[in-house]
Length: 365
Picture 1 (cartoon, helix red, strand yellow):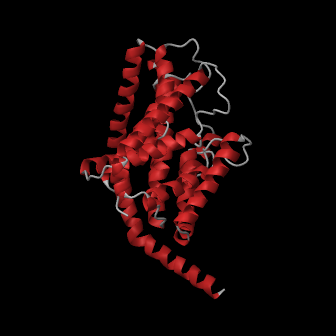
Picture 2: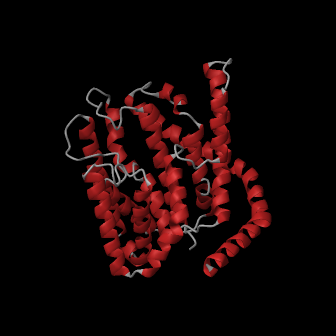
């Protein structure tokens, strides 16, 4: 299913939301998300409240995958692998350069560090890496099985499937807090749930329905985000909000906010080459943010200026980073794309033959 530019615009918005969140909690306002707001300036308290609007980014990304469906092919896996591989290499170069220029020019890598770097290149989706990529590649691999289930059920059965998954993720995961099923939402269980939600919205929420209820969806997102932000602010001030684990991706209010914002953006339909051009670098922007650039380079900007200027610096740094990351990603794909074409021409046909042989043996067995 071909993506319209509204979905690509949603990807851009979400990655900017993620950048704003990461820059905030990892460098500029580290007290956000913790119960340390009582004696802070109003900018930190504002940042906590604004996370009600920002924290939907990851959930939206997975819903987009469910809406359009993941096409699991070896060629797509190779593209993911090569992209992650090159950003892993950049991460190593960045670590060496930062250590040499800002820590000590006399440092030396020991054998264990070199071994870990090699493993990072060869097995980029290993456990202990970026949690989102680990979950996404798992979702990528099981997507064909999910679609086999989707194709076998009708609307009524699909609704019951979502009710059961919601009960499992919210009751046994969010409210029970046992850690057995889904403690935080940072896992494949949560991704599968969101994938099914995204696919259901495509199948049964028609374009006319989204258009007629566009501003209702926006109102739901706005009100829900304000409520989420207020509860997060209260929690940060040390006020006990029962069972309110704010920064969990399966927080039921957060999931509702995500669905409302998703349907609001998807109610617009348009085509833009420029938007599509920017959105094609979303993975690169994310990986540069997660693997390459350490947040220590942003910490000198933390609470240096007046609260109003601090907020402007936060926004400016995120936008500047996004622009630089897109340019770098376009440059890296001048290297990646020829390698991918080489694979598609020479190795992918051999892979397809191997798959067919295995399938024939399974059928005979």
